[in-house]
Length: 491
Length: 121
Image 1: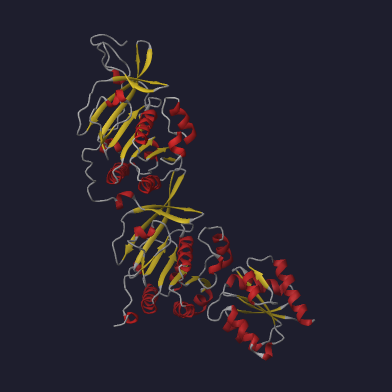
Image 2: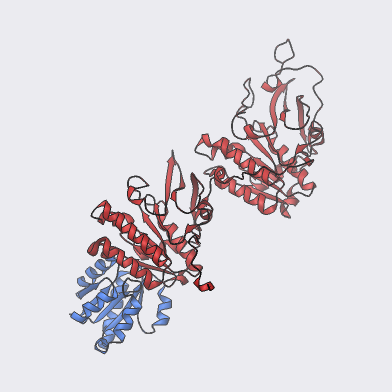
């Protein structure tokens, strides 16, 4: 059998051109499949279909875009013109727009089917988009007629080898009984909670391969759609590499002396404390120490822009400006409003993988937690994030705010998010002692290494952070912020 | 009364154009693709064919080719319109006027008038 006689691969994939979506679909759409894209008006269906067409057109494919009662082609193209994927040079050979509405009106579904078959053949199209399936559904005499239309389109797709996207507005359930015979159903939707809204994609059905289950975030920018697969759905199942004897320190000698063996490489640590307690300085010191060791480091922050942060830590003797300038220190700064959890994870992991980052400090974990509209997801998300970071051999420090500056109540969310998965936990606290406000540090837990659990005062000087020796007098309840001598009242 | 044949697969645009041209005093024929346009022309020869470019069944370029190949239609003026960037089409069809969709109605009427006047000249 010559190569030209080889049967075409039945499982060849059609790349969608939407970043992240092919990964969700297990490699893209299956060639010659018929797919329904369902979503309310404004969900992004038309944009998605156009993005796919221009992506395929750029690769040499011919795409036929048939509208029913949709916006005019001129208006559609005007809307696409500012998108990065749009290329007017692909019109009309690569992407061809026609209307099938009049044919549907005059000849019903049989006429529309004939038009689709004929135009696909005339244009030698390998991609067909039918925008406005709901019009065809409404024009069908019965549910049986509509099913027959879908079935015959599917037969035509198999025979003529084109892949079809049928776009329809949500009308009742996303998975309509009439849609059961198609090869896949993709649902796009926008959800709102209070004044905030976000976009989600879900693969409701897909024949031919496994897909990433569940709901995935996507956003629409001038680049088009971008899907961020839910981190938990694609987390690596393999155990992280054994760090062996590789240990590392925070770069504060008097603090590192409390756990002489150091932190295990690839471990996750959490620094808890109220605002101003020194989390950022501790985390920056951790990164500065990594830079000294020749490691690439990453700072991810939500509140202080890079220049302000560099100035702040420089005043405490931590110089990272040079490393940022020469690219050894990467910086992700994301103002906390309107973040999407999976976008943040994607940004972080992309830099870690691309730059072979060995130390990460995430400053302001509360902002990351607030990015999720579903608090129930936080634990599984952070478990997945730390697993991904461990698998890359990255040692991570998360800084997390506790809400109270002082008081007898200790707000340590031990069962939530990163504190549930962190191997090492540092706790910072303000305490009023002998008429002075002091910063206090303690190690709550540290896995696989001995550590000094005594409570220590630490100070920040222009030369850096210094952890002081244990208190020389007996003082209790320091961690509550209201110190007292044993058997006596508060100081 | 001058006759204009408007050819467009988008029903809304076809009807809107037909109404506007009628209001301007033209007799208007309509077709939703090239083959239907040829059928209309066989019934009543228009003075001007204003045709969309991307259409099912028989598209704009094929319609133009068929009209130009028919000696009986040598006096029929031709004008294209498209959502595609028409500057490239102007290069391919020198001398033939093109309208870029979406277009200004006044510009459309001026172009139609000019095409018909050119024919008379």
